[in-house]
Length: 294
Image (spheres, rainbow, N blue to C red):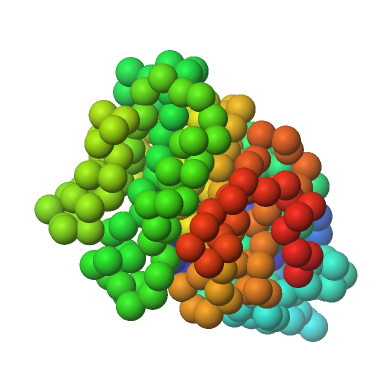
């Protein structure tokens, strides 16, 4: 049995769900997870080997869904609490166990998902969100909320305006849309960013998390922030251009820098991804092969 214990925001929750479902499918185990709001596929029954019902009732959020019991004798209870504990090739060799995913591991490595990306796009299908865009328009995900108001306020998660402007100058587009957090729209930092985009006369779009996710996902040209939320929306999209930041650093905050060993969400098998790397105060469009291997 695979149990998924969600933590973090929507993007990290989706990563945890996918790891759980991949393991359950590969190992022939029952998947115990709570459905994720807005993603109907996460309600799917992934059936397989389970513990005895007595044990299931101790751990499972939905014990009645467990259809195939395994003997309780000799079962193992294994908790994968963080990414550092995780080796997918080792885990799939485990037999007769309850494997708990999370709550702290976010599994932010594309290599885990690459062989299953077509299945993932089916599992996480959502509706197209029409905000008036055409295929010639572009959208920026401006991540501010938790970065300036929440637990991350002391860390430089917010990408500087120069990153977004480099992305905009690297493509042609008709109209610019900006998607950001409604709770930050009275904040001076939000106004600073919007002022820097004045020359594009952007249209602001903002709703709840699922609405914003589907809005970003529905564009043909996407500029993401350092955010698994917009990374996943872009990954699930049919966009022809996706711009991704590669900041300098490696210290907490610049988690997507090439020096950060725990995170590697660089999609290396799709030409639509464009990477913009920071060199001190300058941002440059680079080829993926020019980004140092981790």
